[in-house]
Length: 246
Ligand code: DX5
Ligand code: ZN
Image 1 (cartoon, rainbow, N blue to C red):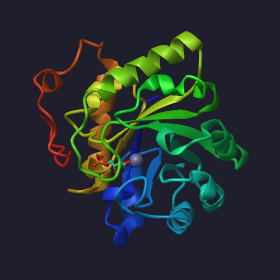
Image 2: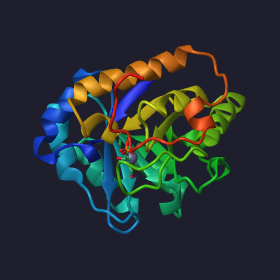
Image 3: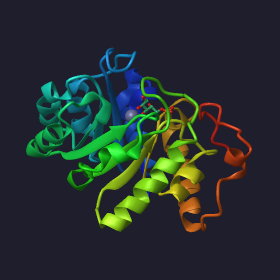
């Protein structure tokens, strides 16, 4: 099932509840919360109090993407605040198996994230433990970056591994997802689509969500015919702000 998970990183934080609600009314069924610590990534964002506030006004699961060092220290606080899904970076976890079990022990769905430079095979041992694998299609830290096309091969590989090993994890993609890139990630096998600037930077979040979902669902119904012309020609998006129909 294709699901849209808007990233609130690009929302107007002064109007966070209303903007998130608008995205949900536009069809988003998950809300993606980017947590940055200024160490693992060169940016600082939000912590458990914001998650707790969103939890009070939203019914959809809050998908907390921890871009932080030593995530074990904060997993209990995010769980307590109301996170439904918590994902940690493979690159940040020395004892990844332990960290994923810690997330599950706090009643949340565990996810693992890999950066663009990290190969899929490092996840071999933990794939049976996770609810979702998040493939970063930009280097984490900022919204509005250009989609990295090599992530498509990783999504396809994960999908094949899931079939061959009969596993149940879901495949999520994050970074540079907008009207020019969404069809390719869906055809590659991504099911949970994180989009920040494409939803929140211009126009109304609900309308943007509806349109991006429409592109995604159309792509899901079409057979895979290789990469789209945008990818084949090496043309990249502009950060995902325009959602007008082509
Ligand atoms: C990047 C974050 C992403 C980001 C996506 O570190 O993990 O969730 O907000 O933003 P866009 O969709 O603008 O690339
Ligand atoms: Zn994210």
